[in-house]
Image (cartoon, rainbow, N blue to C red; front, side, top):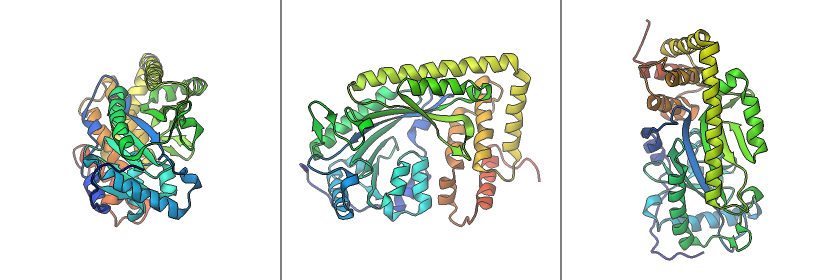
Length: 366
């Protein structure tokens, strides 16, 4: 590994970083566009490994520790990531919070002892150190602005390659431990809200079409085998034999096709079941205003109906930006980091309901 710039002596900030993060929302929340009611955010990730080192699944614990330290030292050359969080220094709630923000994956939670995380102040630029691959460079963006995210990822990739020298083959491209990421090593994803497709049942055909076209779709909040809130993540499943530009073109086209299907289903609902749809939306809003206990499953489903109501113009006194913030605030990791005294699900549900009532204007009954 090449370390060309002067190294600094850095210390992981651990819980102090977490305290800072829970007090600040990611910057993508503040930027809205034409697709913001149906696309929460998108993310571009580049997966890389260090030249001359084994993939992590082949490394011993001692070798993983050595690689983590090398990565930490190399990142000292980039002021953007001047402090690294070591996941092993955090508790379970804090690690859960990082996963809820999509900074780390479930794999990182399972194997957190040798994983680090670097992120900038905006929470848009993220680097996972020593996860499934040695380095994961990610950039978040509002709705479907994936080209902006890719441009920033590509810039960071060039800088980090100067520091580390990533494993690369002239024929295969960037070398990864997973064949799905071999080549460009680029995964693009969007979190989309598709309630009308779920209500009409058309989501089944959409899922089949996505999977048949070499893309992947999965529920974001899978609770008791159901996709709570109708939130899905769509991502590409191909990185070999195709350029980054081609991936972006195909991905944007696929997401726009899905959005067209969702819009058509919403039009069908308003035409064929207008009163029923409005009733469901307004009832959901009323429950959120007055509930004394809210499970995460119930909150996601109710807020999904409210989000649909905002899109259809039925609900007018809140906006998408506020609702996005409430979703992040209502997740278990966020609640438990802010309220470490919580001992069980009941207490968590009470805190969640109180938080949402407060967001909607305070107490509605005694």
